[in-house]
Length: 239
Length: 239
DNA sequence: ACCTGAACACCGTTCAAGT
DNA sequence: ACCTGAACACCGTTCAAGT
Image 1 (tube, rainbow over the protein chains, first blue to last red):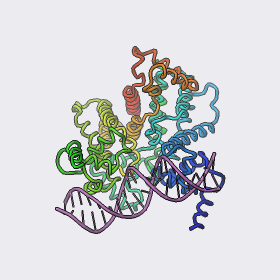
Image 2: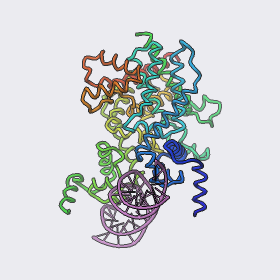
Image 3: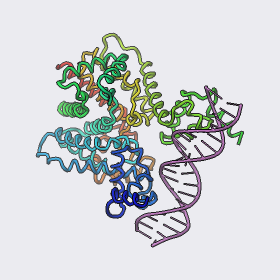
Image 4: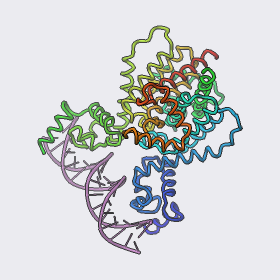
């Protein structure tokens, strides 16, 4: 009992005293691997080799923990953006904004719990506004009006939140089943869904490798992203 | 005690025995008014004038309750769509699809907890696929390829989820404060946000009534929606 | 069939106590 | 300053018992 306790401590909380940063890092990792709903004060404490009450010396409580997790994600987005190649002077604003959106999406994909957490929190951290401000700056320098830039912030922001929570992915229907069972499952489902059935048929036949997921969410994200960026560019030149 | 108990029952659970429907209706109303996080088995039971364990005779548990809430929302979307005026033969597919998206959005606005719940649930109810199938049917009849329709399903679906959880609304900064305090609050915030500050300035001055919320999320939703629908139409005619 | 009370394992949080 | 143990009010859920 003592042994296993010490082993746990040695394995999961190897060095140094507790700190807000370390608590948040372990919390994020726990949410990534087992889901946000297992992140409880008590479970988090055991993972850190400490008692639940110790956390209160570094965080104001569970709510503060969730706020901290949002902060962590935003920080990661900033780091990801910082790694981007510097944009050339007078380059295309679309290219620059596109890179940033893709960077933000990468972070959201690493932390699938983030979009719904960010969307349900009542206080928006300052870092989010900073990201929006930089994006707006890029657009204004590119010649967009403040009004159009404003609309774009809403479009792109909601897209970043919505696309990770994607609901429509028919290729997850037969997940984990053997091909025959998956086929049967799908056939039954497709009975009442004539258009979707025809669509899947059409999509599968236009690919070389039908076994590969035909519903590539990265491709679809970039498609919509470019659609929006091009639409903004069109509105810019016609106004 | 007896009296207040019976009073409660009379007030909140006026007629008939418990049923899945009645439980879900009260649960949705509770989530609407006080937030999804107060919807617990025990609280829900007291609101229904019953013991927590009685709920298990109508629902398989908390998880089943959440699934049921998603079902309720989808049903509401279907009802809302059913109330739409019948579309004329050979009408514009964009108009038809636009109406449906706006109907779905109305329901999401009534239940702000719905998008993140739908997005985090692991099983997608059949009703969602039905809605997607109908939307796809409208697009295909309008001349879109299955591939383009597929992309559109993703774009519109993620937009419906993302736009309700909207994070960027600068006009909520000084919420509930008197004008002077709100001004100060905003000025402080705007210090590090030059572009947003300029944007707010520009937007406010282009309106007649600057006190009214200048960030109208309905307008912005429809703007993006039309942007997407027009983009799909353009891709249709050029392919 | 439908509802209940007691019980169990878990949760967030407070507080007085340790070092 | 930082951590802890006991305690409190709350969860979801099981189970045997009531009608």
